[in-house]
Image 1 (tube, helix red, strand yellow):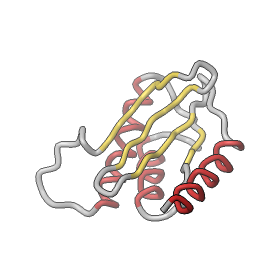
Image 2 (cartoon, rainbow, N blue to C red):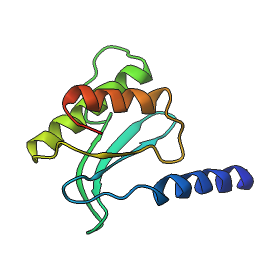
Image 3 (cartoon, rainbow, N blue to C red):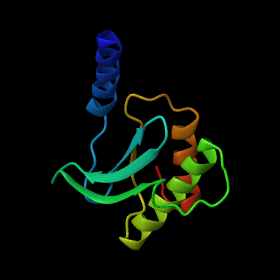
Image 4 (cartoon, helix red, strand yellow):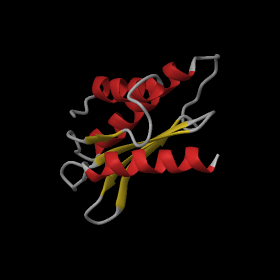
Length: 116
């Protein structure tokens, strides 16, 4: 188990070494757990979270797939970002592959109006 966590940390560091968010173009950071998905826009210059969204904020009445929920979270974070006049972001997938829920969140953010 320890080896698996070490590999995850190495992947995360490798991705983050190439990405840096500013006030004009913040980093869209994704965290995925087994049940939920979270997204934040982070200004790395000041180490400050500008906008955050998660599936816990959505009022979901009917049963949906996790990918559909991630798409909605992407649209929600884009909506909140546009209210704060943020249009361009740098996408940070973290240690996750650009596939499944992470990809759906990115597509939802693009549909919502973010550019990256």
